[in-house]
Amino acid sequence: LLSRGLGDVYKRQVMAKSKSRVSNRVRELRFQHGEMTQQGLASAIGVTRQTIIAMEQGRFCPSLESALRMARLFCVPVEEMFILDGDV
Image (cartoon, rainbow, N blue to C red; front, side, top):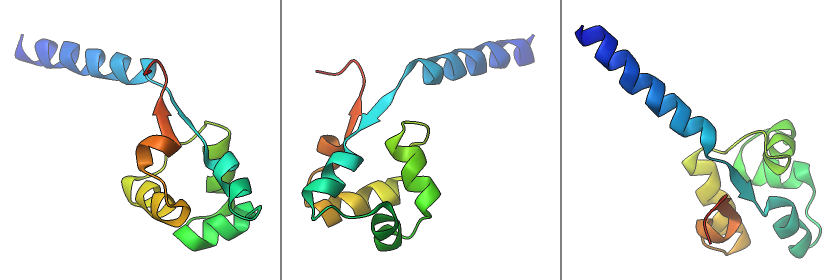
């Protein structure tokens, strides 16, 4: 009985996570900063170019560390770079 209750909680958490979407302005900010390349951004924050590609396409959300590094690099708050869809 207890395990079933925990399973229900887990299912609700997974469902809640699947509903949220995060969009970003990474590509726009790269171009505003001297048309920085995907490779240049990747090198600056310590990830691969493929990670930047996936991020810009909305297929990947970066770690908090990577998000903070990009915010520092672009001189913008994280909230201006990543937007939880549905937030106004």
